[in-house]
Image 1: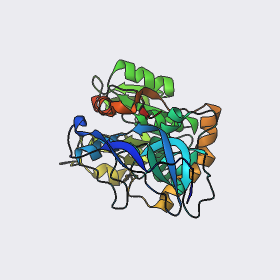
Image 2: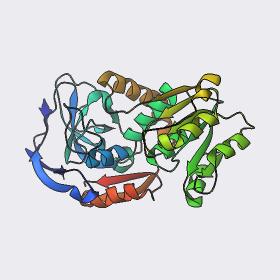
Image 3: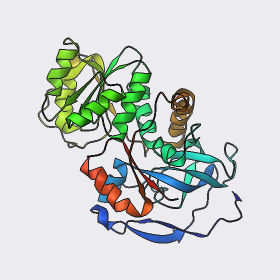
Image 4: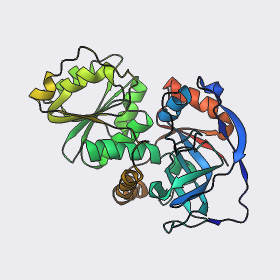
Length: 337
């Protein structure tokens, strides 16, 4: 390990003594983790808030056995130390990345295959708003669902961190984008980001609208974070040979009395994934494609993370409350400096 001379032995981090509402979180002091082979230690300047953090806090998304139990899946900051075998980064480099846990802390371990340089022109806040959503969208929308130029996609939850990322990337790679959102303001935000039509699910039937705007054909891909509540409608809005990609279950995970015939008649594919259980090799492959395919778009400004709120680290409880309110448009980021 190659540390900086001023590396402390203890750090401040968010503690989760029990599962429950946002106010179960508190602050405590613990040891600074030490990077192992193939890892870097990051002095965290900013960390993103994500739905999986909320699920972990509630007791629904346990970390892997070898991961930090501290909340937080994405960070940006400065490399403070490197483990054995690391040649991609050096002490002092600015990096952001997808952590396996431990992001709500002053120092966090990043596997080198999940670490990326700041996009040129980015500060820590902007860089911290990238990893989790961009890893997730790239893996599910492009690698697994195979969205390509000329196809169409329906993105549910269009103003979430995932949604705002997916809209921009799908548009940048030549797809026609439709979204759902829960207010006129949110629908307008989706269309400003590149959606051809955003559907207010509170006042419109998204299945009927998609049928109308596509001339009855349907869309090639649906990116869904609702789950059971939308499952049958999602199957119905897909075109022949379409793909439903499920990434969360905000509307439940048990779909009962669903007509599955569209899967056979239209030759549909239903897929889904979570990021955390993926292997280090799988995450590295996603990272490498992001660097080659997406980083140029970020650096050119044609794609950019949408940031709703930037809060100080001490307001982590308020940040989780904001996430649970679903009133935000884009990402919520905490700053540690």
